[in-house]
Length: 140
Image 1 (tube, helix red, strand yellow):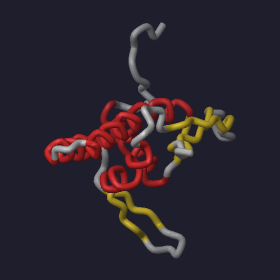
Image 2 (tube, rainbow, N blue to C red):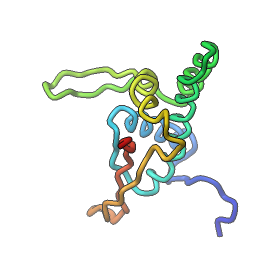
Image 3 (cartoon, rainbow, N blue to C red):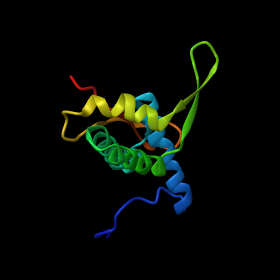
Image 4 (cartoon, rainbow, N blue to C red):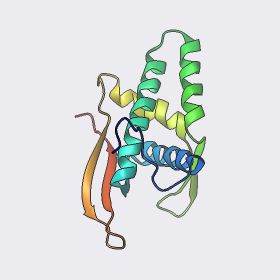
């Protein structure tokens, strides 16, 4: 029984698990959605929601020091950049922290929580793992 046991191991050691979570959250903020296993999506979701909340508090702060503190807190928990290939085949480097503070967090200024959604996709053909899409909620 898993009474009072927090978190999932995901078949990895602790350093690999931390790196996986950081990279998946960074991809979520850059792309708006990721397709992954249901267990990973459930692990990543609270981390992403907490980072968005920290970014919102940093943007709403009147004091510049509180905004800097929020940026440093987020920077400690995310990789600095992500590299993507655009439609024309060029590689583009995206600053994840700037993306979070400039584009993602302002979308949710009036929303008290629930910034992500998990949609179940079914089973993966190769190993029968439950697949899911973890996406940022569009504020409608």
